[in-house]
Length: 435
Image 1: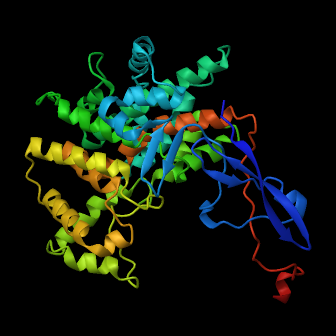
Image 2: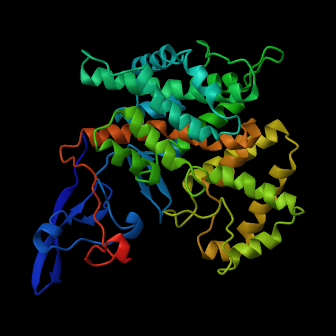
């Protein structure tokens, strides 16, 4: 059940239309305050206009806290820096979904459930093979998550809590398997099945890259890098895709449909596709001769629509805390693997030049998590068009926990934003022969 904000006793006074009304001020556990406008329209007939919901809280949430000015990100109260250093993705997923870190027994049970539900119905392979070869993996995955509902229908006769637990476990485990399966099928390779002896992240890498003629060797540094990548992407408050999950879920649709909506929202260069856009931008610079300085100047020109992907963030006005962690992982992984990749060399040079340029610091355009995560995923051998899929797998625990929180909120309401109409005023219908 959602923890509720508390009323501070303060009020905001709004004078409009010759009368003054009082709007209560509420406060969260970290001191963030909000003016509760729930009764505004009923009392005054007015609504608020807030494009992009930049100043509007749509819910109270006990899952993730972030402070963009101070560069703070915490899951259920735990700093993301500590989780990235000491936790594994499965443990962090349990934390987000259940509210507390698991003990040994709880974690082992969760791992066993993930393993037991990791296989995908064999008939689903035919669905994957039916998509055109050049289909984007994100579109395929979003469609296939919706299709999962048909293969695994409602659990009749099971207590609701147990049904939800089994459904979310299926999603966490099978989406990982489906992502690797789609990659193998797109390459015309034999599908690799999950193994009992491998961890969640190691299993994914093995399903992606193992093949009969060259068995995949598990590298613990690569497994750690993937764990960190997914932990850092596990939740991020009410971003576009999370808001989509909660909005669609508020209509009381099944969890599969709500998660599919989140995947659709994640697909795009301004959200989940940003890490893919970083690599594509670097390829664009490389194709233009490899000199990135003209591109930096274009990014500084306010009349030029070009932007440097991987720099700046909608919420963080200082260094993205996830970027610091991902940068350290990126440096460690590249040094260990000794990869010879001109694109990655260019990325490191670009980072150094931008960090020395006062323009970017003055405009809060620091390297963000997408910049470093794109480099890490490329170093792991993940195809560029699968970067957003990787993001989606990591974000699953957050989406699931947000859906569950909204479903259990005693103040739940179906999402129904208002608008300010700016179309034509009433006008008479004109018969077609008079037009």
